[in-house]
Amino acid sequence: QQQVKQSPQSLIVQKGGISIINCAYENTAFDYFPWYQQFPGKGPALLIAIRPDVSEKKEGRFTISFNKSAKQFSLHIMDSQPGDSATYFCAASISNAGGTSYGKLTFGQGTILTVHP
Amino acid sequence: NAGVTQTPKFRVLKTGQSMTLLCAQDMNHEYMYWYRQDPGMGLRLIHYSVGEGTTAKGEVPDGYNVSRLKKQNFLLGLESAAPSQTSVYFCASSYSRGFFYEQYFGPGTRLTVT
Image (cartoon, rainbow over all chains, first blue to last red; front, top):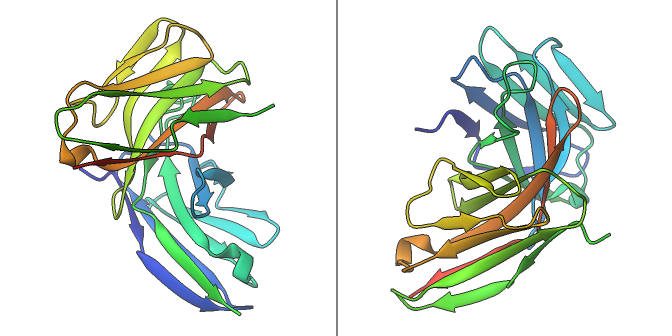
């Protein structure tokens, strides 16, 4: 049972364009939603994360939008660059405030982003 | 400060063989995790540990065993490898940042079972 569903599987964007990746979750106990970035041959690395008490979080060109009622969240990459080409994973977890799950993450299926120059 | 390291980087096994993957972290993190990554499936948690001497099952534990005899090391064992265990294995460690835990991943081990 995939508790976090991610789309699209792959995405091709031109340099300077906006990349949008969407995720939906089922477990209402989730209260921490990170995004991870993975380059070929490397492990995933934390990119940006959001808590459900805010609807949006921005860090540089990366923005998470969160819709608690719809149980959906998305990653927007503004002014996409070839260096952003990577696999992106959304994830969900239960935080310490929610009773803790010892940091265990439930990942989405991943999106392969290609930014053409 | 090497972060999270994994040994080996690549391995090819025949069906039925056994092996152990080693994960080491030098960040003094309490929690450690083993994930497997398969195309179209994301990363799935195999086992995790909340401290030295403790382990627990994750989402896909069958066919794997783990041990955490030292705080800095987390071992993943395959007693009798099967082709279905062909995957890329990632180890991670984390610490509490108050509200949440930030996980740091190793570079992965690519395992092929023929």
